[in-house]
Length: 123
Length: 461
Image 1: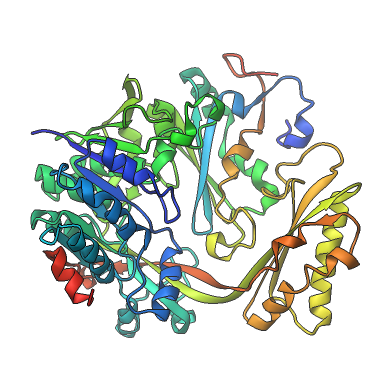
Image 2 (image 1 turned 120 degrees about the vertical axis):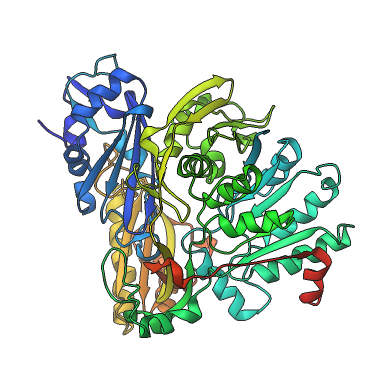
């Protein structure tokens, strides 16, 4: 198993998150959150098993993040990932161009998860 | 009882200037809300008020009132609720009162909500043992107390509802919870009890969904090229029902799209635990709600549940934290990324040789995967990147010296550097954010409803 997106792009049986879900991200202090919404029920069920807090933490590890918490909203096929210390100090202190974590959501859509999602979306 | 149509025409200060005007003109609204205050906006307003005691509010708002004034006679039901008051709601009311009076609406009641600004009380509270420790780090506020520029408690919906009950047609607040801008008019209209947690939760969910404006109506949507007329995107409208449910929609004929997907993304936008979305009015549970597409650009939101809120209110304080500056240059040609990194290092080394040590520095190569650093990375060598160098330091002179060191790179650095013509960066004040909790019973809100001409006179206008 390999969560590194740069190396995993050559992995034939993997699923790009952006092919089965969409996402939006933002900030609260030095915390970022990424909301991920599955496009259908089968995708949600598959992501519930595969898009773990650990998978998201591994993806964003190079940012120097802290713990990742996952919350589930099955009624609207959504997950909320709360990422501690994601913003190098937060909107006020971070020197980064994206001090508010607005780009984290679209970045996460490039995550490749091992295995094939149920309804297409594989490569 | 008929429902209540609430449209939100601004998601931050700097949002589209025409959106709230068009929304009020075409949206058949009962209530127009405008949410202007991001975490650091009040720090900027404090900077403005320090220079002019009649400043410190969101100046876009009186301009909007001037545009809407000719429509107020035909739109007899329209009410406007906004946190445009910032740090100086009375001055904002004075400016709006002058405009309304000049436009023939001198008697129109304008309400002002105050009590959120507690900067003067922080010292007294800490002396009494109220800790105001940082919500994340736990540090005592004493560490930054001498550098505070603003300290505001998030007020809830009650003073807004009180102002509307007293006849206000425009309600100006400072810091209030974003969702409370919607909950206040809903409670005033439906007469809900303040412990009717399910209904308060429903209205809070509606307010949360519309608070960021066009993000609910097709803005940021992943299939952005399939959204019709993004240039003319309609801002969101919540049609609230008496049971606390709502339909999220937008004005007929506008661009954008409202779907279960666009609304779902907004439900989980900038939240923590979705089962406990905390507001001063109610703790909302989003995990029980459902989204159903009930027509073109119409999504029904039902089933939010709620629990009593905390007995503590959130305080957002902002303190001075030195100076910052940031400069951009384009770097072109072979080895663009390596040249950009080297050029950034040269700038910082020259500042050091000039005798300054910078507390914090960052070199970014935009285009080379640095926006989400080390996570997203383009394949292959790059022939063009944008170098961004950013610094922060307590000493303004050190930051000012940095500002002068970018341009010399054009002649004395690696080849292929362009973009100097955009000018030298300037040193700006940097701010730190201090979230804390305050016992609810220490905070008093005040409501003052007066005719427009009275506010105008009180400001000498």
